Amino acid sequence: MSKAWQVKNLVVDAPVDVNARAILRVRIGEYYSYEPIVSDPLATTELHDLRISAKRLRYTLELFAGVFGDEGKRQINRVKTIQEALGNLHDLDVRIELTSDELVELAREELETLNRALASSHPSTYRALTTAILRPPPDAPQSGLYGLLTRDHADRQAAYREFKSLWDRFALEGMRDDLARLSSTRNPFL
View 1: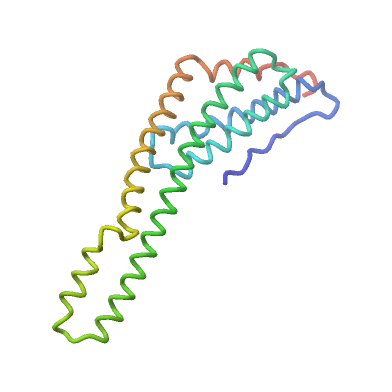
View 2: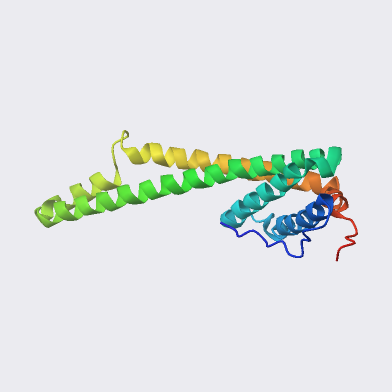
């Protein structure tokens, strides 16, 4: 999991809004530091880290909702939408990984079974034993798992397209500038 960027130079005696904006600036920077990977649908770890960063940004906006007002609420909704889209993507990444791991385990078990059978069988049966492994019955678990894996990959591509579309739409709407305006203020204590 990505480590949160440290917020430095907070001033204990400063008004809440001054420190809230300083924290928000760090969370915005952290969030947008992932922008270079947004166009890479295979950057699963980084996309998950972006989701975690979006949570931090959202929670900062929510924690200081009184400071950021209605514009802050609008940004919360945007960030929440991105976070949820990335959450859907991550759920599929996890399911794909679990299904793949199960298929690997089944293949390992099949190989062990085949090796035991070959080791204790007459060479005349080798072809039949190998063929049985290569053509499992239709009710073999692998059949369903391959179908699930195929569906999850298709769903993941759709989820990535949805996320990317939201990211692009919010970029065109000026989300980054809107967030920057929320975080801008002069700090008389620095």
